[in-house]
Length: 455
Image 1 (cartoon, rainbow, N blue to C red):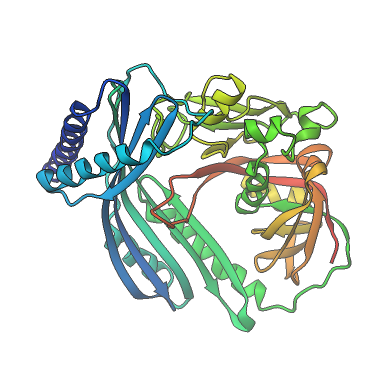
Image 2 (spheres, rainbow, N blue to C red; image 1 turned 180 degrees about the vertical axis):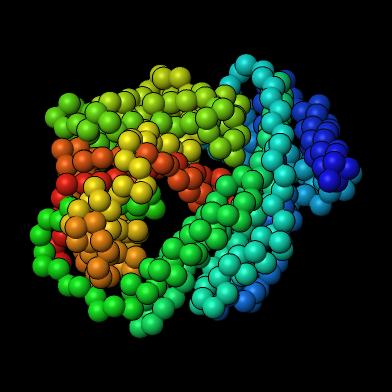
């Protein structure tokens, strides 16, 4: 194992040195009035698709691309190419790309919001956790799910980001993670959803979740309870809470959206509304974060280790990317206006006390199809589906037929927030469009003293 790890580390060092070599040769050709940024994105991922608890499709992705950004005066032009791993060939095609950018940039208009870091900086982050063995992990999952109609997708591997510029930036970041997103199906097209993700694989949480899903499937087989529209006490599991924080992230913390009065959190920003003082949301990139995201942006700026977005229920710092920072004259603290490593502070309600604390009400595992019904008042609508149960006196008694909720986050995170879960769950994005996403959230569950259902 040690030899294998040492060999992999040497391969990573060689990859970094090859990238820097290409960048330095390109930057040597940069003219006095030109600034050149070279950015590497590479992925080595394994994917396994399961259906009926059997492997139906397995594959791997090995891909690397180089993006060049040429800056001259107030103009910029970008282009990218795939890399083969052959240093001479990759340099030749990158050189052609640079010449094409020179021809293009002279025809482009000035960019008033162009900004990049003019301070040289360096960083290296090497993944210390072992790479998850996809074959062994999927075998353990299938063993624990024997007899279940499990449908899901496994994704794991290593993602690399590199940045080098003629300014003097030299940054390298390697991360490893896994993600398993699945559902177990019962009779009448009913299902229970599960998700497990992390940096270091451990089969125990999956086995425990599958055991609880067997019990939930038995409950799902009971006749569904149909509730009348109204307000019901509810426990929202972390996966359900994630749907709500995703709505907050939708232009909520972006500086430009706030300054142009398009943020759904305007009433919070203006002091007209507030969340419960226990609500604290942070963007975390330092030692307390996952370490998945690079500590640098494409423009060479360094991200702060922690950025407080909501503190004691009040508005904190906005997310300021390079373009917004130039437009509004604020320091850059983010790669974009969307949080990528969001963490919510936990509370004191232990997992084994959730049902008794809920008493009578709804146990909601997931929310679906969320959208704004009135963004000016931070009002969200969405659906419950499977994995929602009716609880009486702390005992789950029946599944609940799908319902539509319509409520304000100022209420759910505010005056109707009864308790926060003591434990948080790490949720990694399952998005793979253009490559595996590195976005993550770490959230507790919420006990709310009333959630409005319209249908």
